[in-house]
Length: 255
Length: 174
Image (cartoon, rainbow over all chains, first blue to last red; front, side):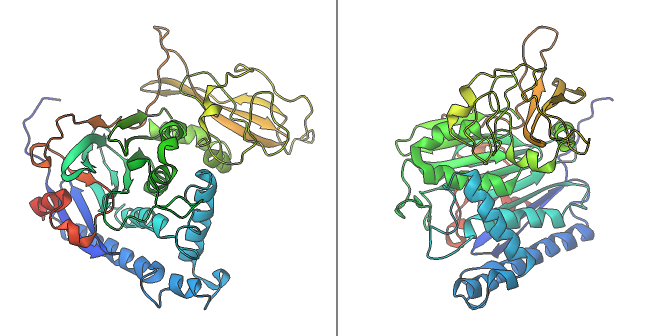
């Protein structure tokens, strides 16, 4: 194939506020500006809004809120909430209790898992697009590329200064999730004590699943300094931890 | 490559793909010993969770090589369950070299599944790192001068978003 100087691929971005945070959807490729692309992106945002209505603990009439106040039981809940509850139980086991949807607010609150799960569902709506696609919800993202060599270059925020980058990582098809204690409104606690987690200021996990990258990043922050060793058991992931003292620890584990 | 490996592992019970992982950074085979019943010949902490257990799992050397069988008695004499032992799938060519998936069956259950990477012609083991290691930016470069596509950070609230890096990138493409 002859080398040809080509213009950068067409690209378009959409942003909407859902779940109290900005959701960005980026499409890169020949179809980026097509109407069908815009319609699928709109459908993806619609799905996220639907899930927010079901699962938001801040909406008093959401199914989750009614479950939390014992107006309904889990068995009578819809498929989404039952799936999320089951995933939270799996997450509890896979993180040895450090991700605990039952022990950070009174009662069951799956919010820490719902975001990654919702990103995956939004990405699924966009699967028919024959383009490179990325869904970024408040700093947790799922991306895919059509070509094996294509990537999205992801910048990881410096927790000490969000206008600067700590690191960059190229992702072809995969997910990047970052959790931390520095962000305003961060609620990550040590499940054993209920006190705010210390030791790890920020954790970024890169892996095949946004749901599990999100869970593992949250668990790493909850764990504190024991996360430095723990992340080496997260096969098929890479990432970076920023400790409270400012030191950084990167990893890339084989499959 | 990830798809090929996923296919290879996918031939094994889906449950194993969830709960049993290669245990170590090196390329030797180590059954991860996640059986709930009697422990296999090698170490096992008996935990039902994934490889994200404490680090001590990863450092124990395997007692058995690729062809060892770990159990004599088989519950599956009738053929409806697999006999205890270690099974190795066909090698699948990937651009990192041939990869095989090896499973250990005990008591009719798959207790571990490991992806084994064989050394290339130079005799150097190759690891499959599915995701790049983040490249630390020592000069803490401002996002404007880096050609990044997306930003990952601790949850950005809608209020803080306006000043955020991601906002700047989104606007460039809206």
